[in-house]
Every structure is written in structure tokens, then in C-alpha cells.
Image (tube, one colour):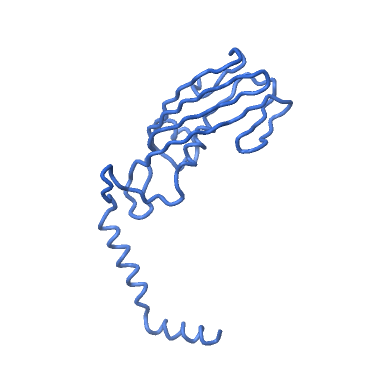
Length: 172
């Protein structure tokens, strides 16, 4: 039985609450997941009506990721509140990012993919926040030192390349 599969057909109209505990097993089950581990609590409130479901998600926790600057693993804290409207219609259609239509013949819906997407969208494009609670930098000093030395070496260009670069820039 899939705990993320909500059987709404047998429920009375009104509000219903669901709680989900997201762990590494959740992320392992998703193909090509950028996230491999985490500890996230999801509270979902479903307001069921005759022709639609309104889902309110409150997602809080931490996900394991890697610093893009030094490759040290760290826990990135997340919190988000999301709303999803599911309309019952003739055929399945995605009207917008937060409104979808499912066939009236459906009796249940899986919220697993929606939860994964809401969590994934909390990851920044550049992950460099590897600091502890006291805001101490946890970046690997050896890796940062190697990167800085490499960048310094690149700036010190071979004089032959500098002469060639000058020729190219003079032609412009």
C-alpha cells in the first residue's frame, strides 16, 4: 500500500488532515532524484468539495546536499507552504503549476510526486551554505586552498599566450 495514495472518493466533503514522514527511502524510490537523504515532515490538509480538492501542504525539515564550493555534505533546512487545486473533470489536464484536472472516474490520487517537487524546489541553484548553527564555515579548507591556488595559476598566463591574445585583441 502506498501511503501517499489518497483515496478521496470515500471521504465526506470537508477538511481532512494527513501527515507524512519523509526519509531517505522516499528519495531512493524516485528515479534520478537530486536529493538522496533527508528528514522532512509534511502536513497536508485536504478540503474536499463536490467537484474539487484543495490541498494545502506545510513542509518542514532538512535535506542532505553537497556544498558546490567545497563538496562537503551538509543539511539544508527547508520550509515551504504550497497549495494544489485538483479539479474533477472529463479528462486529465494540467491547467497551471498549481491547478490540475483529473477524470471524475478517479477515486484516489498520489501526492508523492507533488511532495517531491515541492521539496526539490526548495534547493537553491547554488548550494554554498555549509555553516553550522553558530554560523561557522564548514567548508573543507584544503579543497578551498586548492581551488584558490588553481585560480591564481590561471591568472598568471604564460607570456606566449599573452602575446597571442594581444594580437587577437589588436585586430578587433
